[in-house]
Amino acid sequence: MRIKNKTFLVTGGSSGLGEATVRMIVKNGGNAVIVDLDEQKGTELINELGDQVAFIQTDVTNDVDAKKAVDHAVASFQAVHGLINCAGIGIAKKVIGKSGIHGIETFKKVMNVNLIGSFSMIQHVTEVMKDNEPNREGERGIIVNTASVAAFDGQIGQAAYAASKGGIVSMTLPLARELASHGIRVMSIAPGIFETPMFATLPDAARESLGKMTPFPKRLGQPTEYAQLVEQIMVNPMLNGEVIRLDGAIRMQMK
Image (cartoon, one colour):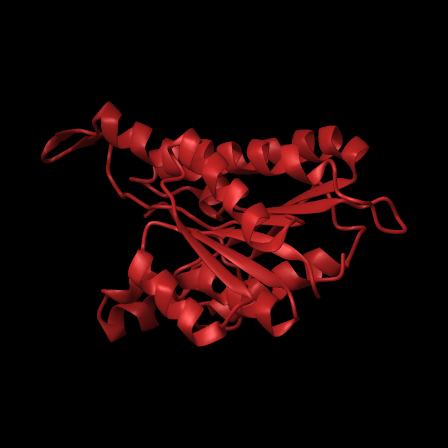
């Protein structure tokens, strides 16, 4: 799929991996709709990047909000051609810790944002994209979800996070198989340790130490490198139904 003149929703688009993806889309001549809770940062990005960007404040765990986001994209740019799900949260908590048990509400919160929120956006954007005019190969849309290496190498304290990202991994192929008849591709990216807001509050020494855990390159991944892979997925029609680890060959230890 060509990015130029196409419209893409980006959840979590106000920061981190999502922001880098928004910038990549605009650089390639596409339109980006930021779907995020952070209205201030979303507005700042619109002011910086111009009329190729729209914003709608959205709680992806609210199915009504998710549909409104898709409707807003159509109203803003008359069509939707893709969805990149970057919205997510990470909570490190043991099943049994010093402060007590994990708590089911904490588990539900992580699942609701990372997994159910992604699926909610997928179903509403698919409803619109299935009616797009297909290109020469019959393609009508592209969906890229964000998993994590935690789906494969979950550490102690990551039960909720790993389960949520494992769900993203597990639904990639069945979604791709189902939506193939509509000309919609589905891919997932499983990032390793990246320089995102999740790590922004850590001391420099701690971030450097985390980066050195990666075999090569020995550093944290950059959001632009995630966005670069999204771009390659968009333009290469043979990439479908697969989860790509973007992790510098890291395999997480138990803790």
